[in-house]
Length: 72
Image (cartoon, rainbow, N blue to C red):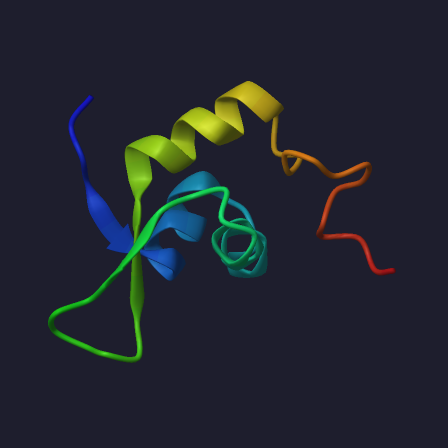
């Protein structure tokens, strides 16, 4: 599988989910991130990996009993 590294914001737009959901996947270590060489404030995600996760789990986070867009 090829790699396409994009910002979390761009990935969220493409997948039509909240950026927060992608950020949570990254902070839990579910998806890989890397530094953006053009902007140290921004992390990049592997879009192909992320798309596979969303296709597999149908928008629900792995290891979660609920959709992380819901308030706790």
